[in-house]
Length: 282
Image (tube, rainbow, N blue to C red; front, top):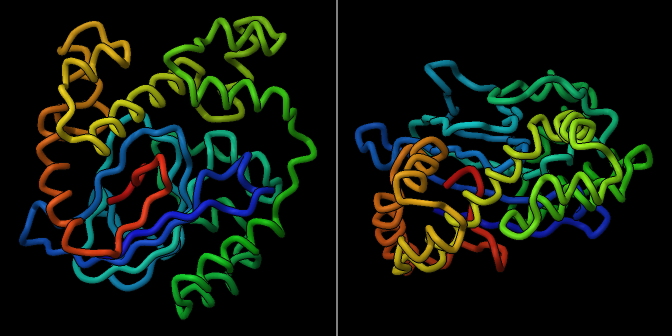
């Protein structure tokens, strides 16, 4: 397996979390290696994949597709070798690209042609199929820079949303609404319009992912300490959040990470951003 994340150009960073690539071979006879688990993190993914095709609930996905904001975990299945490039947009990131259709995408996987005029992506799709890792990342970045038009966005409001998303333990929804200058109800409506989810759900997804990352980077962490640090009032609450978002309990996730770490020590082909792990696929 080869996995890598890269920060995009600085002009894209207010809207895009990272560019990433994955090369992996799946085996449907092995339940531990027959696909990917997607979990809620508030982000939207643009996927271009080649080789074996992914399927979701038995439906085969197109070569280029969008994964919308998720409220629960989903499974993608594949059989054979897959090679893909991805873009992980921040929850409000699609709004910075007016040419991307702002269609309802919550808990949906849509053909990219439903979101972006195929005339804008056909050349990119063909080039990515032949591109090496570095060239593919550059092609994606150049495409996004050419489509970027954030002029109609309220950057001050996006700053409030970014703070709510990145600091869910110390910055709650009422504080965000107050700083935004809108009433709580107005703020909830605006947040839902920009991100596809209400602010409480955005904050909850962020808190879950911060807890998940704590376990990912320190799988020996005491789960009770992790639970209390991230504001879960008891283990049942903590476990319920993990089961809904990831399909397994915190303890099961911890054991899976320990097994994954052993595999990572055998390869140099897994590269994360400094403070991140894969937020949707691995």
